[in-house]
Image 1 (cartoon, rainbow, N blue to C red):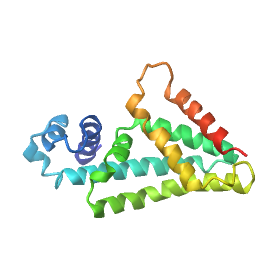
Image 2: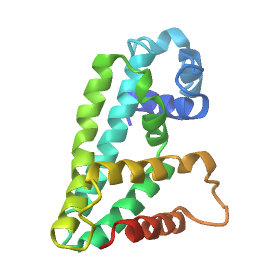
Image 3: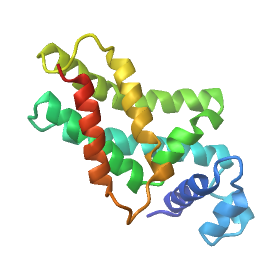
Length: 187
């Protein structure tokens, strides 16, 4: 891992723990064992780090879901796998909670760049929902975009209450969510 990648990873950890506004460049420098001034050799500022963290999150999501889509699965199984992947990635990676909590803190230009990067991920989800409706296994009266937003809203808050070692594992929580979602969209 390069020093820059280490800095971005540290920024994700600090942003997740403190939030973007409360986090300082000094916090990030301390996390990587550098002086604040030395950190500026690698970065232009805190917003650059937030942008990099969010781009990394979009990349993790797109790559993981794209890999899953290469398998010949039914629409129901694709939806199940997509939910399980999303929950697992969200709970295992520092940058994903940061993505959903801090996107609004970017400048308009940086936010557009991130939204363009995440569009592919959303399009994969929408294709799963639309394909399921076309073949008659998912309801056609539910707008796919609204269903997707509901799925994301349900899954993306998990990091706020999930505790490792708790009663349910991430996979078990994912299966509960899958049941709720499939019961809602299944024809």
